[in-house]
Image 1 (cartoon, rainbow, N blue to C red):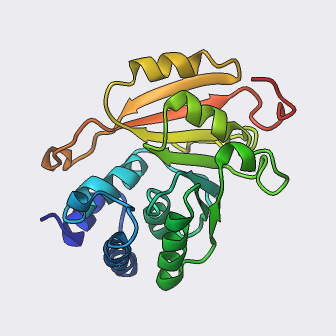
Image 2: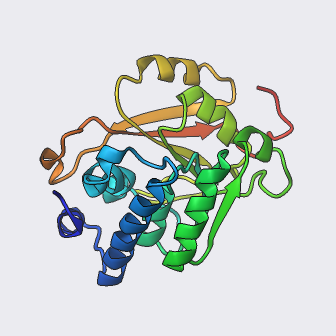
Length: 240
């Protein structure tokens, strides 16, 4: 079984240091998630023993080659058991993370996990993205929306648009503010075609996620999909 030591080693080899405190928090998260998973379906039971390679590594490996704005406010859309939001928050403690899911049992479990981990600047919200994105509290308030297998790409693009701020200047490998970040695997040809046909989508880039140590994983087909909008929040009065 690939454990926390394996995860820390792979991160180190790819330029993402993990402190002892962060490693301890990730391991505490694993134990809490497994415990809650007995009562609420948060992750596949078979993934409990493959937590680091199948869950956490798939959530954070995009950070090996890209970065997020410091202090960014991020919405994890369809968080389920807190993935990818909680691992990202643990490894990037400066970000402000909002964990959103429409299923109250899941958000209740995630809230208790977050509280037990003593994670600062983490909000847990129950609701439907397409409705919350139109409210004063959430509209145009986030630097990024991130999602992992929470829906088809065109649906995610529609749901996420209202949450995002407009673009800001950026440098280097930083993902631009106003971007929907989707972590997906498999054949995306049809999903990309439908998403690119949306009038408010400016561009979609797809990068294969690859890193040193990836040959140790069973599933090597994960992709980083970045969706950018035409005036993400400025056009919020908006047409589809």
